[in-house]
Length: 391
Ligand code: GLY
Image (cartoon, rainbow, N blue to C red; front, side, top):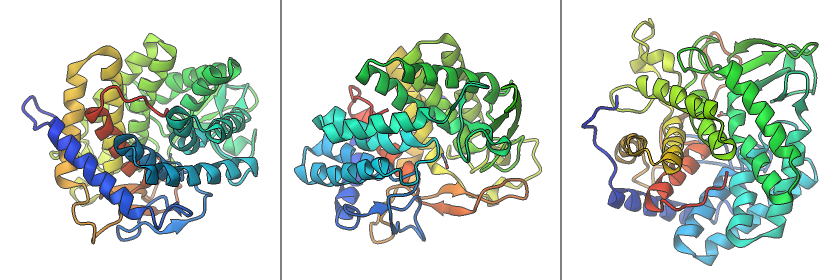
């Protein structure tokens, strides 16, 4: 619960925490330069994996953040190995039949272009943007998340996609072709209209009518139930609204940002790190929240969103709240002893099975690749307020 006198992360603490992350990233280069990092850890250690998951852009993003801070060529060279792998993946269309092109290509390849003008990074990211817009549905104006295109049972989008659409705004700026940004805009408007409930909470996925394009209903996949609030979905809503506002300056997105952020911050337990679903901290709920795992990654994503909006509007209160979240993470959730984990942040939750959801259980109470990335991004934003984002 964020209070007026909640402890905040100082600049010195942020710098020390970021340097600790960089030390861990450096230790991991041997294992994860020619191999990708699994979406989540197993007993707090990430295994290697092939570059075929939706999450394999985050580890290269961590390496780029380490490179930006240190300017050490070892990081640049390792990150470029991943750019090659990401380029191979999109050229050969390996596991890219879904919407997660932004998660994959912004922190790896857009970053490579922005930081060192990697032509391969640029062209791979533009190919990924083309792949993403191939999933746009004109009946309903949305980017279909998963599954065969146009199929009734798959005719839906998910709130997470607000982190994929920035790739499209970037592609339009980069190529001068407005079609990417136009699709991002149409998708975002559909999402803002349907996915945010009256109280500022969000639906995870939203079905549309494949005949008429009319909005149908929200359903969860990774949350506890259709009418609960999956913590990470809410966090994608917060950061995604800030990014949408950054690229489109639509006042509705600014309102969406405040509504989703206020809801998120109102559902935090005493130590400010959410349970994996926010139903477990609803006073009216019957569930015993104390026994449920946390999702620390949600706090990292929200901290990035708060800092991103603060950098756009100069709102110091948003920055204070981000520092409160980060203080909790740095003090109680960050990996301190590298012999116990090869990750950066403990107690994330990828997908927890409930009686009412449809997910495959994975990565419960573990490090998560995106949690680690957004943890580093949030710390970088504090240490270097002029940081140019990869999104
Ligand atoms: N975008 C999928 C997840 O957050 O788990």
